[in-house]
Length: 285
Image 1 (cartoon, rainbow, N blue to C red):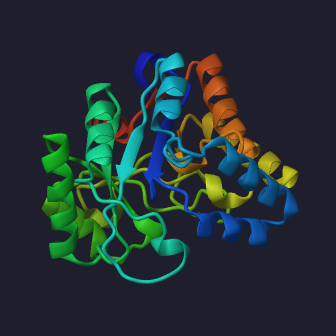
Image 2 (cartoon, rainbow, N blue to C red):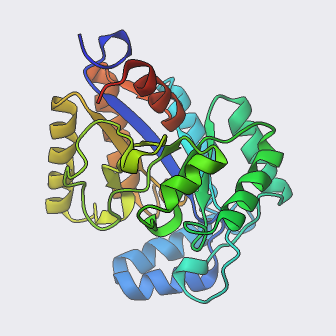
């Protein structure tokens, strides 16, 4: 017997940080200048293809169709950033109450996707700010939100998880890296950090680690295979804005490959909330 439902060999947790929902011209110019002519050409082609249409950062319908085809559901973590500044950290701001955002939140929730909170830059140690953000999101979705991840993976030891406990956020997926694959330091199973009641699902891979590099892709495949071979939980953090075959073919392709292989291997593919709930019932630590 394995630790997962229906004797699945391992679990795959699919998550999407919703950092921004639009792509502005300055974002395109910045990425093109930073990443070189090939990427600049992709940005130009995407700009031409999306003139007068929905932003190529939106991608909610595209992701929902992809996951629906595999009969799986994921967790979308929405961000209500109020910090002021300039640069990539502050691009593409949106509010939960924006009509189009509120509508897609409700549609995803009604379709069985989990809605979670992507805590803003300075909410990781601010009870008032995190509570406000959670309340705003819950007013949109119409029921309690239990899953969270802090923006830019910001945590304060002894503070953030206690804050999650207090506010009723029972599962988190902030520990991990945005620049490299997971190194296994917290193990391969869910766990409860710092004596809290919060279940932590460490990030196995984030789409930002450089999958365009063949060596990094191979290493990422090895990390996924290693955790799967140990019967653990593989947690993917794929921003919905990169699920675009024109701009980010390597990142979207990798996501599809992991999903396809997990389905072929009979893995249990689920959301943060459901995986944490199963872990609590079985106490898999």
